[in-house]
Image (cartoon, rainbow over all chains, first blue to last red; front, side, top):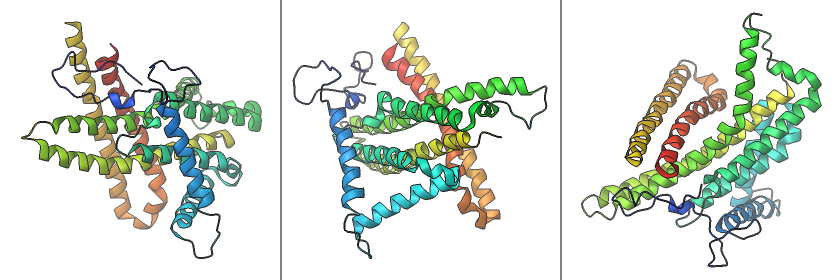
Length: 253
Length: 74
């Protein structure tokens, strides 16, 4: 959401909390962005991929029996997601483990790299998270129909409810199914964007001498919270992917 | 005048985030009271806790989004 406008024209304050989300080309002064332009969003996403590669591939390349720091973090992340997929989706869900691991590592790396001051956070943009969520939605729908055929539609037909209620419930289930990619993507982007904007708002207050100590303390506290949110939102995105995938693999209620 | 109304609307939409905080607190409080009664079962339910928090929080984020749209897009 790269809004060019800000509150300065209408409000009296001189800071622009949303300016940190503006997508701009890296190598030219021209502000126009085509699909092939290398922007700061491209750069930070590429950095997230490189960081994932460095941590997981290079970190575990030595295969020492007593893991070093990098290797133990890589093993911890691998084991964490592996256990999550196995717990929620069951053994047959493990086929999708590489995909879910990729999602988790990309989101968590993009979130953490975005916390570096003056960095750009790709996951704060709906254009990034909507693609991730739509990919999950399409995967789940295709897997559901390929694996179960028409029986996948029993997801919407709640057989444990009284017969008179079932058509009503079917409509509700249908709506909730199609709202999934919306809430899935907005949750991640909204949380990340809100946190970063709040930090910038407090940073704007730091210019006023009387409240600047409070402001600095508030930035520190919010930053700590953001470190937590960066991980938890990646975790929530991944765990919801697992839950949706479980619906596709075992549609019966 | 319309811009000012949009700002008032953004403020009202911002209330929704506070109400979502009530919901998130409710989820966490009930989890804690359940976890203290049966601590051995608590560890296996943290995933459920986070899913519940995520669903409650998403609606608060929606109202934050409405506030943002009113501030910057209307």
